[in-house]
Image (cartoon, rainbow, N blue to C red):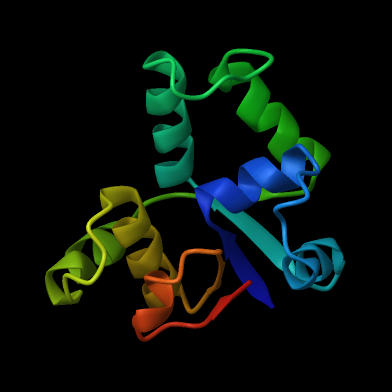
Length: 128
């Protein structure tokens, strides 16, 4: 399986937060699965860190790549096809970061690992 992590799922995985569901944890640790973190999520983390809304032990430019490597999470770049898919997306979810993750998951055929119930209203595979 190819899995795209929602930003909060990534943060909960790297901190071993109990908010991470049992099923999400099981999918994440399965060595058969390929796991990705979108550059949109790293962008969101950097913004929240800079605004003081997210505390990290190190600056995001050090912390995020280090944690991705430690947990065998690949980076998923943002491509034109995913951004153009935004025009086709219904306005069910207003968060721009979540909307681009939805588009990336749809376009690339990824399963989105997210606790966000609004995302489940879209035509994509999501798990929590």
